[in-house]
Amino acid sequence: MTRPDDFDAFYTATARRVVQYVYAVCGDLAEAQDVVQEAYARAWQRWSTLADYDDPEGWVRTVAWRLSMNRWRSARRWLGARARLGHPQDVPGPTPDRVALVDALRRIPEPQRRVVVSHYLYDMPVAEIADSTGMPVGTVKVYLARARTALAALLGNETEDADVSSHS
Image (cartoon, rainbow, N blue to C red; front, side):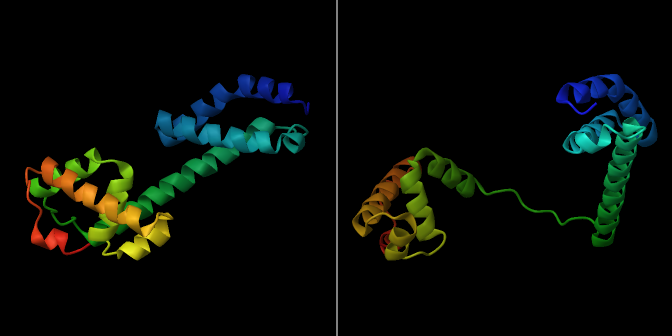
């Protein structure tokens, strides 16, 4: 019983029982299905050896149970850590200006967006942007100029800010 067809037959004959077992143990059908699939994936990798076991279904059942218990322990540790940290602080939502800027950035071409974000948000000089992107310095400058113009139009600010122009 070492051919792939044999594994398929084994899976078909046993998967339902193993899922029912793990579901009974953990009480969550989706969790049971996930860990059983992982256990069968591991069984498939070892099928040439497992096929000769007296009870390969028992091996899969044990692996699935252990996976389920490991997830449960991880969840318990996570909940314990969250309890020690206390309630998360309220974080204010994005300002209308930030929402407008993100929307405008999404609407300009990706090369322009990449250059303008690198330059203004990461304070990268034009030469460094050129090196990191493989673009000529002149292309970076053109993309910056086009991006500033497009962003000014998208943000309803037809005149460029003196601060924005001074970064080129």
